[in-house]
Length: 498
Image (cartoon, rainbow, N blue to C red; front, side, top):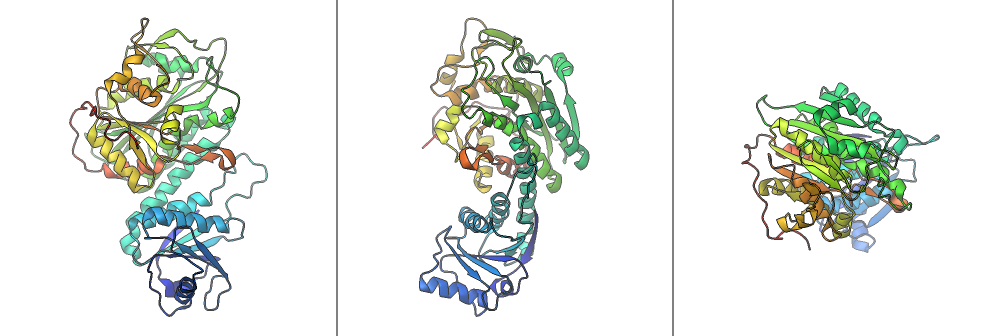
């Protein structure tokens, strides 16, 4: 989809040549004497339209308006969150139409958050997956004009939003693909293609190279699959050679049966989304390609399948991770942490400013936070605040969870340095405590996106989250001072829940 930004008020909107015109109506919004303003003021006065976010009023061939379709959409106080609701409702109402060109006129008072929300939501609401369909029509909406009071003032927010859309849609594409169309090998090829097109550095390591690195934990998960593992390394250099990079680590389990600890068959098809973290790293790099931030960035993607086979790792097996720590695998369905721990150890070689891993890691996080907020854990308070703020700004929110040492007690075992699971209680926190063992050399953040990376049911599909959060976080890291060495997180459960 193409976007453009235009200085466009209600008077100009009346003459805008487009298939459909969406006008966002704020509480107390004043109108002029043009046809669109009069339609808006008369509808509000008659009680046919409220400024409540999501309320709609449609008009067809309204006198004085060039667009055949006009939608007035309430957007409340005009903040990003309420603009998102309004645009979502408006674009959804147009999905069955033949509209290819759309203009969305924001209130004159709208800020950068509203511009970002309008762009990202218009793309999301009109998205269609087509790659493996034989007769796919694809997206009908082709071009969206965003009308604002001052295009020059909104340009930066607009450009970040359009870059974010490209990243989100790349993440959706790879997460939505069936598992036989998104193997570790194909994911590696996608990373190479992305790097070649946009000038990134890229290495894709196979089983021999990973074995040489001593990634015994990663290899243990992969050994039950006929598909060979891949370890993907992406590099973007936008700052000085001596500037410490930010490292993103994405869980890339392209299909998760649970291994020997096999999952129930119901909805197992959704385990193709278990590489949502990897997809979000690819998406973040796609956005960075357009934005060119003054930052050094590394992306690490350990990718494999988790399958049951005569060669599969068994409950009770002990493996040696890249860090040298031994791990007793008590549950083969807790495989994500086993591939991530070796990638987190590999990240040390970059002497990073910060490392953030993104993983569809635990069902426990879905129970705790549902599909609204991603779970966020951090060993560093400044990093936690940066992630929290980025999520809020991107309307891709997260919620900080605790890292008290007591949560790691259940990971003790008589047969290795650490077990990969404990009991059911606090499962998302226990998983984070396992990962934390491998992150002592740098500030570390962990995003558990098991509840937010995809939707099930009739709306089944990838959400592209948390690409928006990651892009906002990356842009906020430009020119920041180097952080102090990683320090222990606060033990109070101050920000842990509702």
